[in-house]
Amino acid sequence: MESKCETTNAYTRKLSVQTAATEVDAAWSKALRKVGRSANLPGFRPGKAPRAMLERAYAPSLQDAAQTALIDATLSTACVAHAIEPIARPNVQIGDLEPGKACDYVAFLEVRPEIELQKLEGLEVALPAAVEVEPLVEARLTALRNEGAQIEPVTGRTQVTETDLVVINYLGKVDGKAFAGGSAKEVLFDVENSGYIEGFAAGLIGAEVPSTRTLALRFPEDYGSKALAGQSASFEVELLELKARHLPALDDEWAKDVGAADLAALRTKVHGEIEAEQAKVAQKAREDAVLKALASANPVEVPPSMVENQVDRMLQQKIEQYERATGQKLNLRPEQQDGLRRGSLQEAEDAVRSGLLLLAASAKLGLQVDEAEINAEIEKRVLRWPDQIDEARRALSTPEYREDLKFSLLEEKT
Image (cartoon, rainbow, N blue to C red; front, side, top):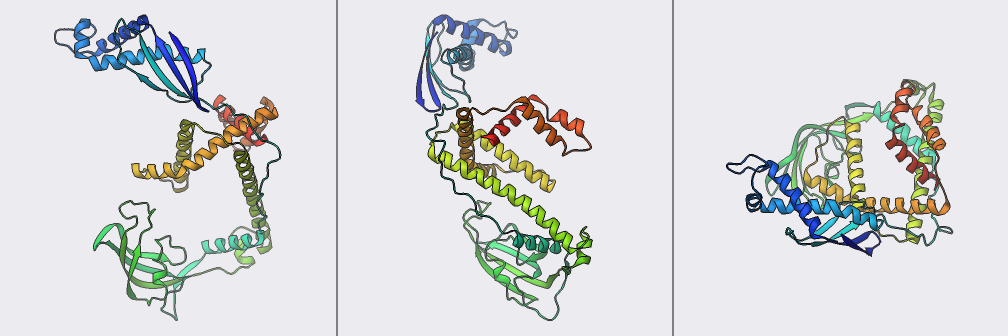
C-alpha cells in the first residue's frame, strides 16, 4: 500500500491510497466469509455455498463488504503514516473491487485545524455597562407579590384594561376553517402577559364584558407551525368575566409571609441575590466580549463536523432543561428539530471557534491545569450536595468528568 496526503483547507486532508492486488484479495475473502455466513442459497447450509454462487447471488453485498474491509485494513495505516487524527467519519470515494486487481481510492478527512494566532495581546474589548440594581430589586419584589396575588372579579367597571384578566372562549379559523389548537373554553386570559400571537391581547383592550369580538390577525412568518406561519386568521372571542389581581401590601407582614424577618431584611436578601446574579451575567458578557475580539483578530475556519456535534450537544441541553423545568418528556417533530438545529448553527459555530482559539491561546501562553487544581474544584463542587458528599465525589471523579473539568478550568484560566 502507498499513500499521498494533500491539505485542501485548514481542516481537511485528502488521502490518495493505492492498494495492492493482495490487499484487495484479502478484503474480498473477508467479505465472502461475512456474506456467506448469512447467505441463504437452496441446497447449501450457511457458510458452505460455493464462491462462484455467492458472487453471482450477492454481488452488491459483496462489493459493499469488500470495500469496507479494504478501507478498514488500509486507511488507519495511511493516517498514521501522515500523522492524521480524523475527528469525523471520512468521506471515501472508491470504485468496484475486482479480485486479483489493485485498487486506488481517495479519502477526505476532517482534522482539528492547526491554529497560529495572529494577535493575542492588545485586543480592544467593549465591556458591558454597569446595571442599576435597585430597579431590579423592585421588579423582583413585585414578582413575589404577584405570586401571592388574589384574583377577584372586577366591580364598578366593565371595560378591559391592559392589566386585567378576562375569562374567555375563543375559536380561531384560517380560510373559514377551524385549525388544531385554535380554540379553548373558559380560559383565564392575562392581557398584560398573554404570550398569544401579536394583536390578540391588544384587540381585547377596551372591550365590554360580557360581549363578543372578532379579531383579524396574522401568524408570524417564523411561527412554530409551518401550516399556520404567515397565514391570516380570524378569532371569534367571547368575553365572559372581568377579573383583576389584588397584590398584597408591601409591608413587614407580607415580608414575614414569604420567610423574611421584615421588609428591610427581605430587601437586603433580594438585593444580594440580584447583585450575585448580575455579577455572573457581567462576567459572562466580559468573556463573550473577549472571545468576540479574539475571533475578530484571528479568523479561523472550523470543521463542519465539530459544529454539528456542538449543535447536537446544545439541542440535548435545551431538551434536558425543558424536561427538568416542566417534568414532562419533550417529543419534538422532525421539522421542529430541524428548526432548532438551524437556529443553533451560528451559535454552535461561534462556540467551536472560541474553543479552538482558547486552546491555541492557552498553548501560546504556556497555561496548564494540574491534578491539584482539578481535585480542588471537585471538592468545591461536592459541597453542593452536603448530604451526599461521598457519592458526589465518586460521581465527579470519573476520568470523563475530570477531563471535561480540566478543559473548563483551562478555558477559565485562559
